[in-house]
Length: 182
Image (cartoon, rainbow, N blue to C red; front, side, top):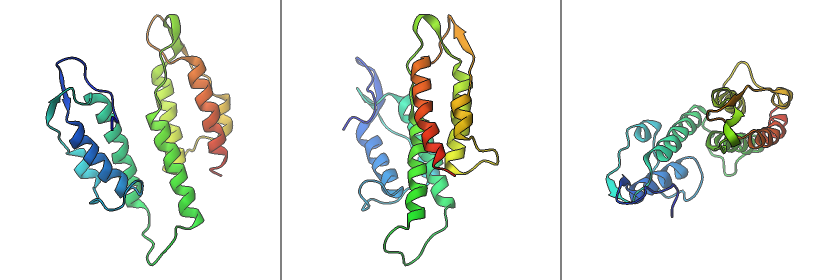
């Protein structure tokens, strides 16, 4: 399974077998995928190393994904443990859904703006960080759906910026998600 882009040519990248094995353990720990794998802690993910392999996974996308998984694992560790529960309650399912949405925001990748124009990447990234904190319920200043819909960002010329249409479309969907966070 190719979870990440691979390096090109004769270059080396992270060993895909090792990366996929760790991510399988992470998903199992987070309650996704198979539940028979050994659980993993956020500290284990932080200190994980992989052998180099020709044609392996590109390091940067793997590192970014692992950072997001660390946050998810830490968030899960702070949740209260419910004992003797055979089925998740509606509230647990709701929080898991918001965690899934937060992870989706963390993974989003916008295309570059055309002709050197687009939204300022730093502003968008900071705003997305606030949205993630709101979805996870870890901020004293949550972002509302209205704020997302009314948000305005600086545009850049002749340097990298996010494609305006992509950002606007994504934020429209996230505003709908935030309405459910009440």
